[in-house]
Image 1: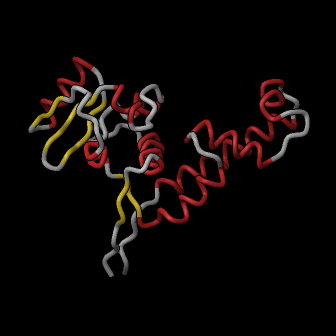
Image 2: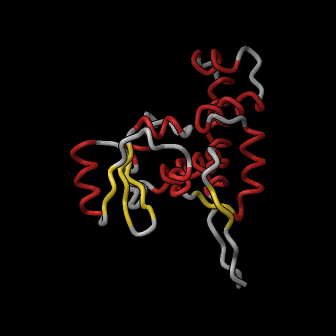
Image 3: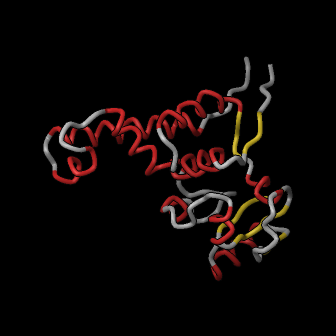
Length: 173
């Protein structure tokens, strides 16, 4: 039986659809905030695009296209360090415990890198098109290697893929 890789974009796409549906229901119920966002004649496409934009900084159609092509794709945060990020002061550690202690004391975001761990500055996240103020960072504890919230991790994972930090996964047959 082939190994299946979870597709975090599919999870994110489902969440966008759910939130867009809720927004449409609120607009049809004439809730002022929803009407202000969708206008007097709410359209589902507009709700999908608004919701996708808020969650991923991408429109719904682009997110859907990425979801279809990403079934064999996973986020790879090590690719961040292949870009020109030397302007940022990153703290490297041989073990997770030391990295977490530094993260707790100084903030940032912790990523695994091969057999090491690195704590990066929020500015580095912004430089690679990830929002350091995204509440999902708090939800996962700013720790990519042991996220506290699976849903928040899936959303951040999808954003990392969208930002271009992914690799193809080959399934075993």
